[in-house]
Structures are given as structure tokens and as C-alpha cells.
Length: 97
Image 1 (cartoon, rainbow, N blue to C red):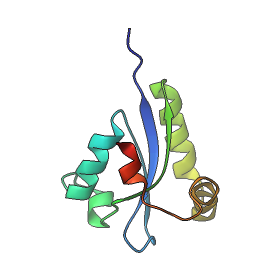
Image 2: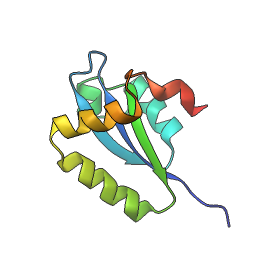
Image 3: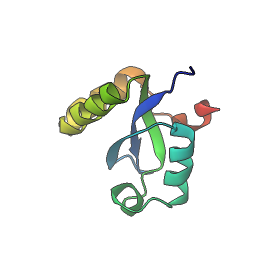
């Protein structure tokens, strides 16, 4: 049986002032959706299209719990997480292929 990956991710708008935390089972597809604006909601409204951080796991429940955990953090703590793994705040979209 093939293992399925799940992702929790943080995206930002172009200026980096707005952060969005989400989860998916297909990060490539979800980022294409975010970039095209085809998903209605917060990320579309604030044009969050830059992938700044993501984590991967095989257990959907663990990833959902991690998403809830990160969403509950103050912005400062989210910024620290991004800084540790992506200090230059590069858009990680191209690394998905």
C-alpha cells in the first residue's frame, strides 16, 4: 500500500504582511490553486501566494493537529518558525517540483 503524504503550510501575500496557515494532501495542487485565486476565502482575499514554510507527514490527524497548533500561535511565533527553516523568506513554490 502506497503511503500518502499530508502537508501543513504557511503562505504569505507578496508584501509578507499577511500569513495564512493551511493543510492539504497535495501541496503542489493547492499552491497552484492559491496562485490562480481559484480557492475562495481568506487566502484569496489577501492574495496569499508565497509559500514560506511547509511540513510533511503520513498521518492526516497529526497534520491536522499541527495545523491547529500553528494557527493558535501569535504571529511572532509563526515568524520564528519561518525564520528557522527559511531565513531568507524565499518562495518555496519552485522547490515542490
